[in-house]
Image (cartoon, rainbow, N blue to C red; front, top):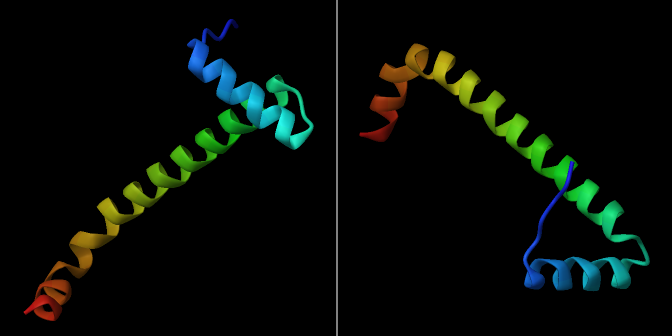
Length: 65
């Protein structure tokens, strides 16, 4: 896989890696892992809400009044 970054993105990644004493690759890989984990959690929450909210719709509506 090749990841093409803009000059600005490369500079920001390089600066972050230098501040953390890590390689650019390490910082980028961690960012990808965090993004994937976050997206997975968001999808799970959406599925749970989509399946459970209808069950409590009446109660939630009454609470909102």
